[in-house]
Length: 254
Figure 1 (tube, rainbow, N blue to C red):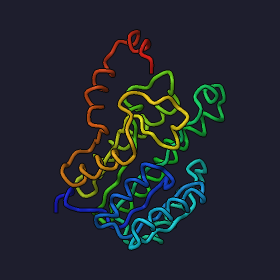
Figure 2 (figure 1 turned 180 degrees about the vertical axis):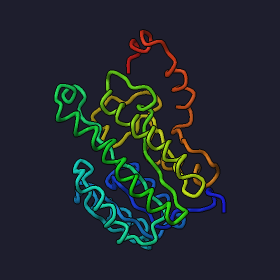
Figure 3 (figure 1 turned 90 degrees about the horizontal axis):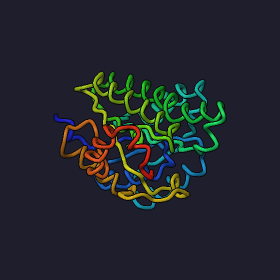
Figure 4 (figure 1 turned 180 degrees about the horizontal axis):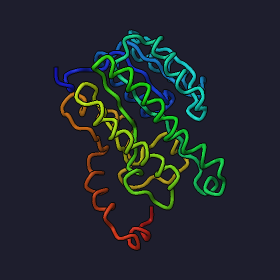
């Protein structure tokens, strides 16, 4: 059966408090999604997401479990415990992310460590364990929320951008390793209006979690692509931006 004919039924969401992850689960709940485990460091935000999902989709079995990607010694065992809670796991959504405060964090080695650990190291460890699990099954889907910030790292958010660039490259390599049995989708949203970005100035082409979720669903159902741009117009814009001379890129307002 072709990948794009298979809808997620049992999903593990790492970063379950994420607005984009919640929008994606909301839309998948309208299809064949049956059970979800939401994982993240804050059980209060997971509980809110759980309540919203169950209110919208009473048939959906939603449970929560703690996972702090900054606590590297616990990442692997926490993920393996989730497999026990979700024995029929077929989909993993990596939605964990920490934007941080660039102007403050760039001067503090411990803050740099924390940001890169959550966005890249811990996430890569979790994805590796999930990949092993799905590879043994010989079927499954991994959705990784990357960012257009990974395409060309900018001065204004180089900590977040470089960590996402690491995760993006890791995920593309993982996609090659796991094909054709397990599909990896690397999602590169533009600026998304979420709780994480609420304090920032909204740039042109900003997008909403619902729109990103819709683009991901279309990719699952209608294509065999590995990379999903959201909105799709970000692809040519970033292709141009990536090749701008550094002196010119430096003068852009964001």
